[in-house]
Length: 199
Picture 1 (tube, one colour):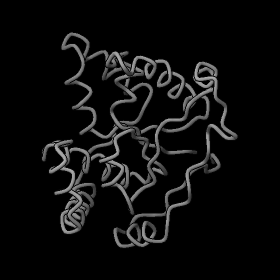
Picture 2 (tube, rainbow, N blue to C red; picture 1 turned 45 degrees about the vertical axis):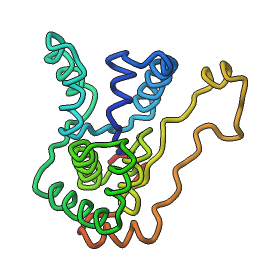
Picture 3 (cartoon, one colour; picture 1 turned 180 degrees about the horizontal axis):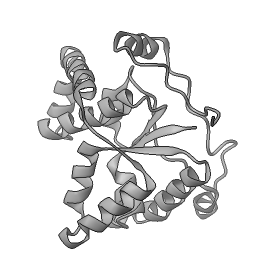
């Protein structure tokens, strides 16, 4: 069974049906993406720090319904002690490597958002997700060496609108590199598994 984690924007587009005017096409694309995960019988985890972001973007009167929908369709994964340990390690390593300073100096992310992003990465790692889908380049940069990241695929309907067809629109993510495997071993995490056979 495929276990994956999604960043908040895919839920904002696909479930809340919200987007900026320049990203209106993302709503249909995210709907197709979520449907494809359902069709593939993938297990999608929703880290609780991400849940907070979704609830902040949701109308207060619709929050209970959103939580019910998320629980019925996805797996809510808590930011627990194991996740906190991983998050601290990621923060310290990225801080030493000046990655966090570079992101903050660019003005793209505040310290609070960076911490939430790292918590999302940590939950994905602690849950042994095979891939973290995100369209956020800064989040992907912080996830390097810990978990594979990629953006949602472009589906045939969107390709027809773009009048462009790649040779493989849903390319498989690359295997985790050696450094990523080493870090998972350090954190006592099992190898991320993509398509396990159901028992």
